[in-house]
Length: 137
Image (cartoon, rainbow, N blue to C red):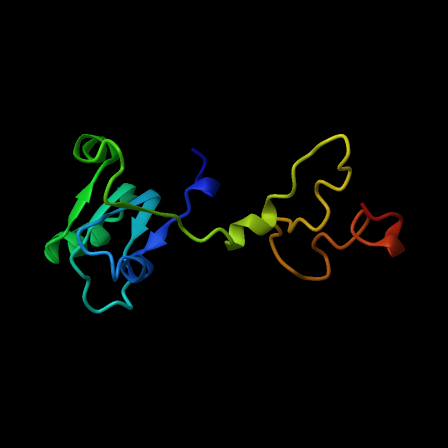
């Protein structure tokens, strides 16, 4: 699975989603990251692709557990008592990606944010970027 389809989820948001779901396992295809803004982590069972080191420590210290998808398949083969979660889809990185290229879509890369070294007068402001400088793509 690509990184775009497996965005990370912070402990704070994970705790918020699981607040009234005691006894259930949070299942997330992605990485669980630590959130320093959260003072104490509640007890919860979390299944994810990976955990950051500090997130794993905080979950285990609170009496919870971090399990893999293999362990989840053995524990709940039908998916009973699990809550499927996903991370946020709008991230800063998505501004650079562009749309799907098809025959009907000639504007696949319109409005795509370039990876620019700097935002000054000399950087990617000439031909191809402005109508007044010959042409605009």
